[in-house]
Image (cartoon, rainbow, N blue to C red; front, side, top):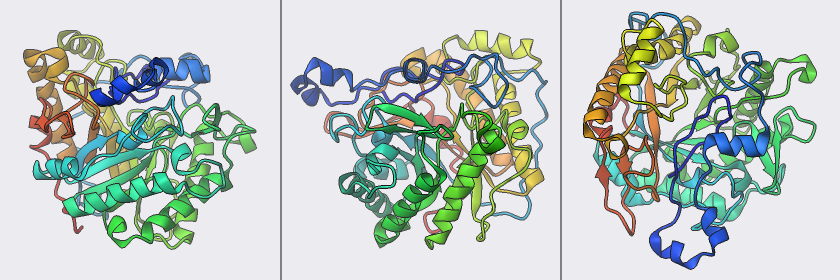
Length: 439
């Protein structure tokens, strides 16, 4: 299963994502096979980055292992005034962005591409948008260099297939404010050897220009998500806090995209894992200056006690933890986290999006437990509808079976599997947004 990298504080792990069909597995050496399984976020970041402890100041490390202690508010946040009320709903499909431990990696061995059949199946279920993560190191093998034609063509093929299926795509640079030089040396925004503002702006300028040159691919783009979950940047760079440093990088990317002639919607995530809960404390005000005023701020939220998305304890235990912190239920705690973000959106008069969230599948926790979780998820979706916020659940992928990922809501069609909606899809498909392909 695809797993998202995380730090030791957040411990956001998603289990194993089998990255090869059975036939391919039989042909690989043990060493290559080991590359087909994502490390957990905890292990990945611990081994690669040596992250700071949870005791450090907020905004300089991953989230605290405890949830927000404030009682749950009544979910009555009004829709954001003065901005578009169209909102899209769907799921993340991780194929092109998997295998952080193998970059740039090999297509068909370390990562794959969703098929037209997969996107058409999701569209036929009513989904209106897919968030498609990709890796910077794959699309640009050297900072400041030309785009890799093979990987770019995969992105363009995927977008053309999406256009044929009439489903919108959020292209997400899934790099956490990091770039692996030569596929080995992990560097971070703000480090002496890390990507510069100019290099970060450069890749987005090149990428948006390349996509815009292909009319069919371009038509499928709903938004450019300029960076997934930036976190743990150094302090004091140019006298800036880590979150202000991220704001500077984000502005550089937006400016470059607009200067290139691009007019599409741009998603801007928040510092510290794009946490919805912590967003207002890290970013008191909307900061992006866009001549087209076509920005959407983008947060993430998970419903378990430590907000990690690992769901390592039972629904009953999670309920007890929620009540101990003053929340009536798991859903009330989750809504409180999202409401911190949605209130910020209302105050700042900006449109916003929930790009990652989810809860356990029956294939992992059993039918009765999954039904309890579906009740919580349904309440979260009701809140999202009340504030007219789009969102994409986490996550599925072509090489992912029913039990490979605790958050998987669909098995995608492939040479070895048929399409299968899983337990969470029952809820997702009740709340499909009000956007359409031509919006």
